Amino acid sequence: MLFHVNLEKAEDGWIVAECPALPGCVSQGMDEKEALENIKEAITAWLWAEDHKANAKRSRKTKQHSVVVAV
Image (cartoon, rainbow, N blue to C red):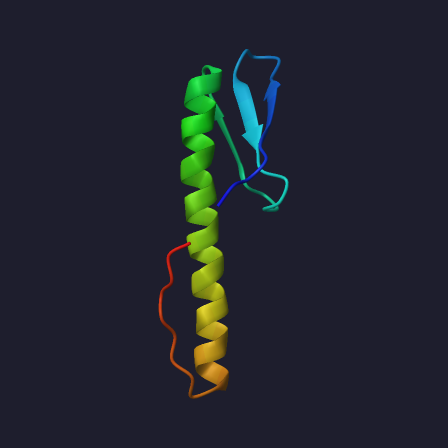
């Protein structure tokens, strides 16, 4: 999957990385490289958490079972 990421230099010199497609998915780094590495981890964690929340809701309401699909 591909995501657009916005980078902005903060007043303290850190680079803030935000993924607008995923509300609240923000990270930072001391430089652009570190900020991008960190936002990739944040995106992975955000997607994992949302998937688990959605799966928990479905499991309670139906007798469906879920499988994991790599994209």
